[in-house]
Image 1 (cartoon, rainbow, N blue to C red):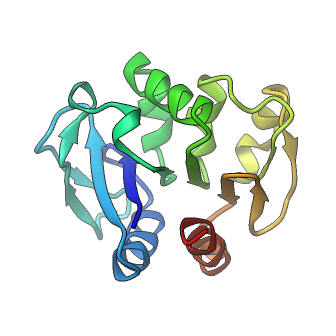
Image 2 (cartoon, rainbow, N blue to C red; image 1 turned 180 degrees about the vertical axis):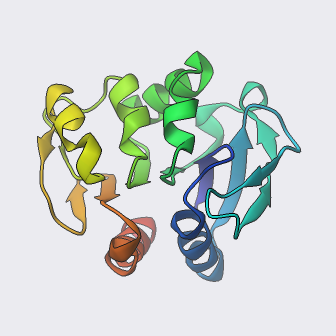
Image 3 (tube, rainbow, N blue to C red; image 1 turned 135 degrees about the vertical axis):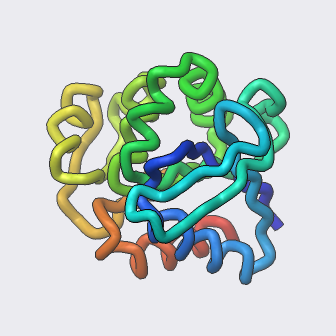
Length: 170
Protein backbone atom coordinates (compact mmCIF):
# COMPACT_ATOMS: atom_id res chain seq x y z
CA UNK A 1 0.00 0.00 0.00
CA UNK A 2 1.02 3.60 -0.52
CA UNK A 3 2.83 5.83 1.96
CA UNK A 4 1.15 9.24 1.69
CA UNK A 5 2.84 12.50 2.71
CA UNK A 6 0.19 15.03 3.78
CA UNK A 7 1.48 18.61 3.78
CA UNK A 8 -0.62 20.64 6.16
CA UNK A 9 -0.70 23.32 8.80
CA UNK A 10 -3.58 24.85 10.76
CA UNK A 11 -6.40 26.45 8.79
CA UNK A 12 -6.69 23.46 6.42
CA UNK A 13 -10.19 22.88 5.04
CA UNK A 14 -11.49 20.30 7.53
CA UNK A 15 -13.40 17.91 5.24
CA UNK A 16 -10.78 18.15 2.48
CA UNK A 17 -8.45 16.33 4.84
CA UNK A 18 -10.76 14.20 6.99
CA UNK A 19 -12.92 12.59 4.29
CA UNK A 20 -10.08 11.58 1.91
CA UNK A 21 -7.85 10.54 4.84
CA UNK A 22 -10.57 8.24 6.18
CA UNK A 23 -11.06 6.61 2.76
CA UNK A 24 -7.31 6.28 2.11
CA UNK A 25 -6.79 4.62 5.51
CA UNK A 26 -9.78 2.32 4.97
CA UNK A 27 -8.16 1.22 1.69
CA UNK A 28 -4.97 0.30 3.58
CA UNK A 29 -2.79 3.32 2.80
CA UNK A 30 -0.74 5.05 5.50
CA UNK A 31 -0.70 8.82 6.00
CA UNK A 32 2.03 10.94 7.55
CA UNK A 33 0.93 14.49 8.39
CA UNK A 34 3.87 16.82 7.86
CA UNK A 35 3.85 20.35 9.26
CA UNK A 36 6.59 22.84 10.16
CA UNK A 37 7.32 20.91 13.40
CA UNK A 38 6.42 17.40 14.59
CA UNK A 39 3.70 17.14 17.23
CA UNK A 40 1.91 20.36 16.30
CA UNK A 41 -1.83 20.38 16.94
CA UNK A 42 -3.39 21.53 13.68
CA UNK A 43 -6.93 22.91 13.68
CA UNK A 44 -9.10 23.05 10.58
CA UNK A 45 -10.44 26.43 9.54
CA UNK A 46 -14.00 25.32 10.38
CA UNK A 47 -12.83 24.24 13.85
CA UNK A 48 -14.27 20.76 13.32
CA UNK A 49 -11.05 18.80 12.83
CA UNK A 50 -7.95 18.62 14.98
CA UNK A 51 -4.92 16.69 13.78
CA UNK A 52 -1.51 16.24 15.41
CA UNK A 53 1.34 16.32 12.91
CA UNK A 54 3.46 13.20 12.73
CA UNK A 55 6.64 14.79 11.38
CA UNK A 56 8.24 18.15 10.85
CA UNK A 57 9.27 19.05 7.30
CA UNK A 58 12.94 18.94 8.35
CA UNK A 59 12.60 15.25 9.33
CA UNK A 60 11.36 13.83 6.02
CA UNK A 61 12.56 13.23 2.48
CA UNK A 62 10.42 12.83 -0.65
CA UNK A 63 12.03 9.45 -1.30
CA UNK A 64 10.28 8.06 1.81
CA UNK A 65 6.82 8.49 0.25
CA UNK A 66 4.81 7.25 -2.73
CA UNK A 67 2.15 9.97 -2.74
CA UNK A 68 1.81 13.69 -2.00
CA UNK A 69 -1.56 14.91 -0.67
CA UNK A 70 -2.26 18.64 -0.18
CA UNK A 71 -5.69 19.52 1.27
CA UNK A 72 -7.02 23.03 0.70
CA UNK A 73 -7.98 25.89 2.97
CA UNK A 74 -5.54 28.61 4.02
CA UNK A 75 -2.87 26.01 4.83
CA UNK A 76 -1.35 25.69 1.30
CA UNK A 77 -0.86 29.46 1.08
CA UNK A 78 0.99 29.42 4.41
CA UNK A 79 3.10 26.42 3.39
CA UNK A 80 4.17 27.97 0.08
CA UNK A 81 5.94 30.73 2.04
CA UNK A 82 8.27 28.06 3.52
CA UNK A 83 11.00 27.06 1.06
CA UNK A 84 11.26 23.59 2.66
CA UNK A 85 7.69 22.71 1.68
CA UNK A 86 8.19 24.15 -1.82
CA UNK A 87 11.37 22.10 -2.30
CA UNK A 88 9.66 18.92 -0.98
CA UNK A 89 6.75 19.44 -3.37
CA UNK A 90 9.02 20.17 -6.33
CA UNK A 91 11.06 17.01 -5.69
CA UNK A 92 7.93 14.84 -5.33
CA UNK A 93 6.64 16.15 -8.67
CA UNK A 94 10.09 15.81 -10.29
CA UNK A 95 10.15 12.16 -9.15
CA UNK A 96 6.71 11.71 -10.77
CA UNK A 97 5.12 10.71 -7.46
CA UNK A 98 1.34 10.51 -7.32
CA UNK A 99 -0.02 13.91 -6.27
CA UNK A 100 -3.48 14.70 -4.91
CA UNK A 101 -4.54 18.35 -4.51
CA UNK A 102 -7.87 19.96 -3.78
CA UNK A 103 -9.22 23.50 -3.58
CA UNK A 104 -6.26 25.79 -2.69
CA UNK A 105 -3.82 22.83 -2.57
CA UNK A 106 -2.43 23.66 -6.05
CA UNK A 107 -0.98 26.91 -4.65
CA UNK A 108 1.98 24.88 -3.41
CA UNK A 109 2.43 23.46 -6.93
CA UNK A 110 2.42 27.01 -8.33
CA UNK A 111 5.26 28.02 -6.00
CA UNK A 112 7.14 24.82 -6.84
CA UNK A 113 6.91 25.79 -10.54
CA UNK A 114 5.78 22.33 -11.65
CA UNK A 115 2.57 23.08 -13.54
CA UNK A 116 3.75 24.13 -16.99
CA UNK A 117 1.70 22.17 -19.53
CA UNK A 118 -0.18 20.16 -16.86
CA UNK A 119 -3.98 19.79 -16.79
CA UNK A 120 -5.44 20.84 -13.44
CA UNK A 121 -8.33 22.43 -11.59
CA UNK A 122 -8.54 24.29 -8.30
CA UNK A 123 -10.69 26.69 -6.33
CA UNK A 124 -12.18 29.40 -8.55
CA UNK A 125 -10.08 32.19 -7.02
CA UNK A 126 -6.78 30.49 -7.93
CA UNK A 127 -7.67 29.36 -11.47
CA UNK A 128 -6.11 32.48 -13.02
CA UNK A 129 -2.95 31.90 -10.96
CA UNK A 130 -2.82 28.33 -12.26
CA UNK A 131 -3.04 29.65 -15.85
CA UNK A 132 -0.21 32.12 -15.19
CA UNK A 133 1.84 29.16 -13.89
CA UNK A 134 1.48 27.56 -17.33
CA UNK A 135 -1.21 25.01 -16.50
CA UNK A 136 -4.19 24.06 -18.65
CA UNK A 137 -7.05 24.86 -16.28
CA UNK A 138 -10.44 23.15 -16.36
CA UNK A 139 -13.48 24.10 -14.29
CA UNK A 140 -14.47 20.48 -13.61
CA UNK A 141 -15.09 18.50 -10.42
CA UNK A 142 -11.97 16.40 -10.93
CA UNK A 143 -9.09 16.54 -13.39
CA UNK A 144 -6.57 13.71 -13.81
CA UNK A 145 -3.29 14.44 -15.57
CA UNK A 146 -0.96 11.45 -15.36
CA UNK A 147 -0.12 11.06 -11.66
CA UNK A 148 -1.86 14.33 -10.68
CA UNK A 149 -5.46 14.40 -9.37
CA UNK A 150 -7.07 17.76 -8.63
CA UNK A 151 -10.49 19.06 -7.58
CA UNK A 152 -12.07 22.47 -6.93
CA UNK A 153 -13.83 22.40 -3.55
CA UNK A 154 -15.52 20.24 -0.88
CA UNK A 155 -18.51 19.57 -3.16
CA UNK A 156 -16.12 17.67 -5.46
CA UNK A 157 -14.91 15.30 -2.72
CA UNK A 158 -16.78 12.17 -3.94
CA UNK A 159 -15.18 12.43 -7.41
CA UNK A 160 -11.81 13.45 -5.92
CA UNK A 161 -11.75 10.47 -3.57
CA UNK A 162 -12.87 8.05 -6.30
CA UNK A 163 -10.16 9.18 -8.76
CA UNK A 164 -7.53 9.37 -6.03
CA UNK A 165 -8.23 5.82 -4.84
CA UNK A 166 -8.16 4.62 -8.45
CA UNK A 167 -4.72 6.21 -8.90
CA UNK A 168 -3.48 4.86 -5.57
CA UNK A 169 -4.53 1.35 -6.55
CA UNK A 170 -2.82 1.52 -9.96
